[in-house]
Image 1 (spheres, rainbow, N blue to C red):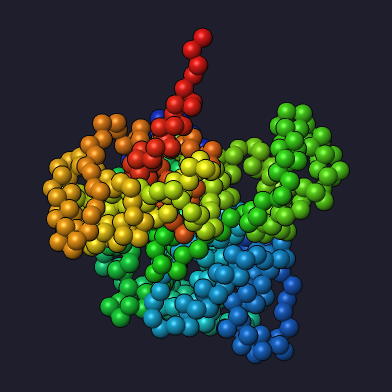
Image 2 (cartoon, one colour; image 1 turned 60 degrees about the vertical axis):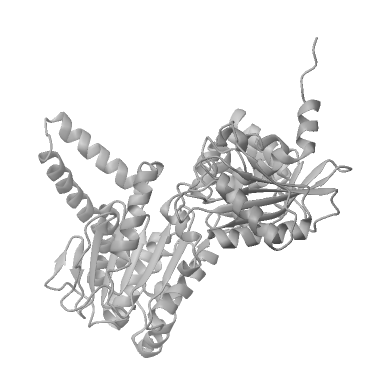
Length: 551
């Protein structure tokens, strides 16, 4: 690509500041900055053309076989005609996955949605916003391609890079003469290729209703980093962007449902729009991390980190070379040739928060309390002395709110509490009652409690009435919580970290809501867990044990 996001931000900031010092104010400031951007874009496009001219010429006699293979094999197409983008010869699992997506969406008539979380520095924009459109243009695989980013300048840069290839790539001209060269519509942010394929760039959140190319509606949308570090912090802005994506973007295509949507980016917030889409199966979602498996000897890496941060880079390198075999053991990275384990661990040591977000797609906020690494898990539920159940009903809240039911098993001998069941669903009243009765029959709970805050007492009466009708004794009591929800949930931190509370890997929604707390969209499951934990006699014993001794 012509420039990175950081380079763009730096250029725009410099341009704005320069014009401000010269006395420019809005709207003149925006016009002058935009003019500077066009000049910068032309300069970078010229540099790219120079690189293109350095490519080795392909053999004309192999043209037919080469084009035939390139039509069905995206990676062959990309590496054959655009070697200047492949200074690193190897690819990685992300690139191979993207190639499969590209081939699938250009072969199938029915449209589909793909969401991919990719680490920074893994060429996602080059693949998705430049090489994919070029492939579609050369073989007429799409008619109207829309590219969208949070900063329109980013995708405008991608379109300029595509135009540079069509104008100056000699190998492309030889094999695809009918698509190369400038057309009558050849503008910044929008152009039509000589074989009639249109590309248009937009900024996220912009008006899209009625976007057409003659009689054609978009048949491919590439969403490339819709959010940035600033606007992702606001839930209101996240909700607004998601609404725009669902209502405006996903309805851009024709009524036949042939629109393909590729959403790629880095997860900047636990509740970002991308993070939300990654949880939806119909988005064919997948998340990639730079470090797939961490090294086994993290203790050695911690010693290395101290040297790297507090002594010198040279001292850390000496330590690494001396212990390389042990320090590399067990490590597996996404793109070894580009970002080996040493480079990634350097990034980690420099700024852990940034590393987790930009390389691991794991944006941990400063307020995060629970992590999956701090949780303890069991494989099979052991014999427990007794069980308790806590119900947090949706009640009169929004219809989309969850009902959360937690069943805990207590082992007095082990001093352990096992999460036997965690039901987190949007349930109607009848189903909730049936589920409570089923779980009680299964676990024969010593006590069942239901949150009665906010006028929920009537619900307890219904459950008791239904249980009585079918001849079930249900030890159900109402709980009117006096402590705040946040306080109750945060009290779980110590017992979870100490391994007093154990989970099962299948309890994905509970784990998800805990790790995303307090910034998650929902916290019903942690609240239910806190309520169930409060019912165990073990909790009271632990509290008494941890009381400070009087002097």
